[in-house]
Length: 579
Image 1 (cartoon, one colour):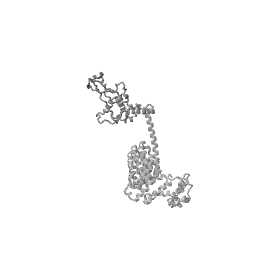
Image 2 (image 1 turned 30 degrees about the vertical axis):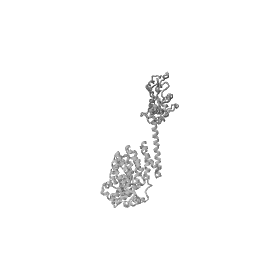
Image 3 (image 1 turned 90 degrees about the vertical axis):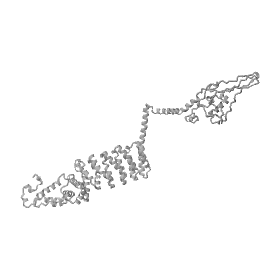
Image 4 (image 1 turned 60 degrees about the vertical axis):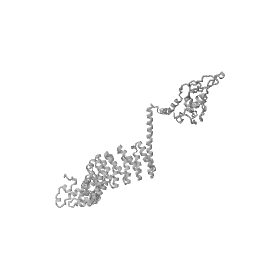
């Protein structure tokens, strides 16, 4: 009574008529009646979701509930009813006998189970508690055995098991980390250890599930380390799949593995497959936020520059787009010195898409450069304003004018000193008094005085004036360039001696206009004291006649030029640098 509720018991059991069972009734008679009641209960229950007992099953239920135990049918033929010939029953029956089934049948059943699960034929409990343990047990016994994996049939069984395993984990274990850690996490290192491209590809396609369910230490040790072998695999599709799958793991990688990943990326930029080179550039642009500052400086700009030189047009296009996505990681100095010089040549690329993208990149980068330039100008104005207590622009203008005056003064310092030296009065000793021959001629009783050669004294004669200023000079005053006498003295002043000796009246008349008279005059020479006496009359000796002016040294009196301040450039070229 405790095993079977009263409503499911057969009439003979309820009435205690066990003699009917002993008189040749089949042994399944009581159970057949109880099963009919159960089937009817299931189909008619309000929560069953059915509209009642199926028509093909109604006649069978009537025979199963017959009052006579001898007329009740056997249960095995009941399975031939069309109602029980469905995928659910078949799946359950196969799961019960899976260990004894041939390998080929097992492979076919495993390949059909994902569709059965998607259609909801098998429930969640069946998947977790009945199918999943069978899959884990099969992988542990096959994947760890290299000799078993060498057989093609076992390899195909493993390839059929892995998608089903990840489907159950993704559908039913995603909300249960404990179950995932118990059933799936221990299998990950075993699956990566299988040296088969098909198995590796099946795992990489579900790498996002592992990333979401496993912690950082497990990701770095159990997932990333073994999957790095895919970067150097000889199969191009596997290298590309490894690259695409790694992007979801980057946020959980430690610095050591990130550095290792960057080395693989640099290597893959030289991959013979154009699609892999293109995806590598896209990959670098996506992981740039997760890299350290040093890794970004070493990786992204050189990688983009290499990709721009790629002959594959989509690769160049991807590099230009990656520059825009990563422009925040370039300093404005790097943009001006490195990025723009790399991008500008592609404004004339052979591909129209590349040219258009290059112009877009240049325009976007110039906006940042212009803002940085304006910022620098404002900072400079702020510094000047702070240094000048807010006078800013006025100080700049004043400083410019003062600086020009200082430059003018420093530039004309040499000539100013020269002018002061030339215009200074020369303190020459006074000329000796003219001595006349004392002696009178007896002729006519008249004594004649010997004529005296006039002497020119700079600054001592009453008719002379102050020396002229240097600024009033002109080259015509000096009469430079005239032809000199072949007998001129070696000191270069003999011409002046002749001029001063023979043109005294002109010098006296010239006054201020004669520039050389202010410092080149010499004292007058005394007359000779010797004379002859003729007839008692003493003759005074005549003065030495003044020499004639040399050709080409004719002095002309000119009007005094107006005082005019010469610019520094003119002063340097006026011919007076010898002083």
